[in-house]
Amino acid sequence: MNPSFSVVFLTTMSGAGYGMLAWLGILNALGMLPRTGTFGLPAVAVALALTVAGLLASTFHLGRPERAWRAISQWRTSWLSREGVMALATFLPATGFAVAWAALGGGATATVVLGLLAAACGLLTVASQAMIYASLKPVRQWHNAAVLPNFLLLAAFSGVACIAAMAMFWQPGAARIAAALGVLGGVAALAAKLSYWRRIDRSQPVATIESATGLGFLGAVRSLELPHTEENYLLREMGFAVGRKHARRLRRIAVTVGFAAPIVLLAVGLLGAGALLLPLAAAAALTGIYVERWLFFAEATHTVTLYYGRPS
Image (cartoon, rainbow, N blue to C red):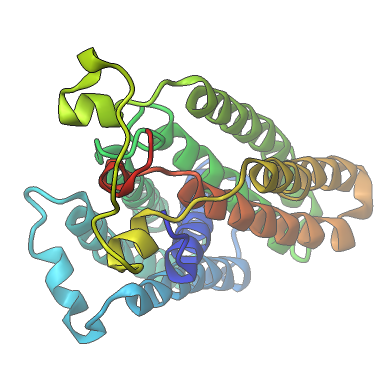
């Protein structure tokens, strides 16, 4: 699949924003974050800014951006519409969460309730986003049970890394708690990502030219002539392929920059050098996850390419 910048940016930044929002609601309810409004308001604002940046970028992928509002009209059957509905719904408790934190403090009942509601909505939005891809049967790399936990774990990891970076300038103790959660979340997200890659590498193609034509009983089948003489939309969007050598290199970059480096930086930040290291950890996590998400699209193969001579 063609890894469009707008969609890659959307899933990376909005995932971090919703993950950050979820952790803010949960950790505030547990009393593990600064209770002052001078922390809560900017923290929630940063989380919402990340989600808005991703959502705005996604409109550039549309042929008619002015009709983007129609994407939410099919929520009964479409995960894309459900993501849009949940994204809009999340802004209500999230805004109330920020205002209540600033006006009443983090310990107020209204703040805690609104924070937990915003956390639930944020996680549901990420889950809906993941299901857009997991529900697509023609793409075997996406239509599996590993996609949903990967999206959730990556959102949680990048989100808590951003919280650790911010909290360091308000309350080092809270930053260390977030950093510790970041280390655990990073290890879990890395394990899930490696498991996902092993799964798609070892899984057999769901469809081949033989199964698509029903001529497999005759032996190997190949296309005698391509259906088009020049590249078309389907080939540009669905026929994109990344070389195996490049994919391996990009996987190493994603693991090193997006997981190993942030985990080490967060771990060292626990020892007291967080003012510099924790922001670097958050930046590295977002950069590496962007590479990982680019690969998520680039390594996906659509069965429509069988029509254009791909063997599987």
